[in-house]
Image (cartoon, rainbow, N blue to C red; front, side, top):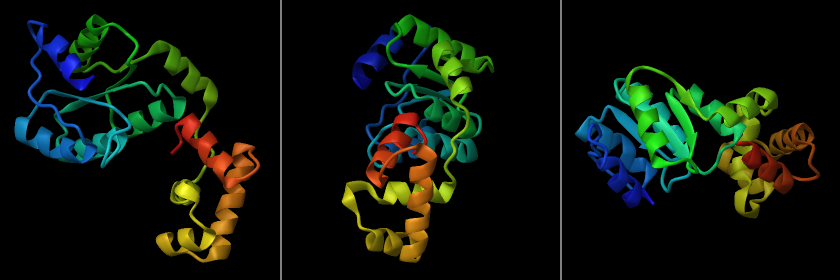
Length: 189
């Protein structure tokens, strides 16, 4: 998908793809090396998420504008992308001409957001989970035990149980696996 998208964007007379990377942890180095005007990032990448890379780019390459292009059009992801300093957020199902136009708009200083997703994000409200509740849910992936989570996050087991209980309550779910799924579905993790 990345290669096909780069090929199509290179067909635009005023756009040039200067680098492509397959892992999120290679993004910042590629931007610092190639100095693009816009970095087009996906969210779910090996090594580092596009959202985390966007936040790092805001610090290390503030002149590079970030446009998130993803299949995961979730309100929580949009909110997190904007908080990370992204200048745009689009869902991959649009034509490449619209993407090229969005890149041009981002270059002029505009913020470009998929309209349907913007409406959904406004109606969804903010993430109800605290940062620590998110950390505990993330650490519970792959069936980690409370003891495993406590050791990984340097917390007591009772504190982990409290955070999990709170996250379950806030997500309206029955257990931590459902809470993690709901939080991911909303884009909060």
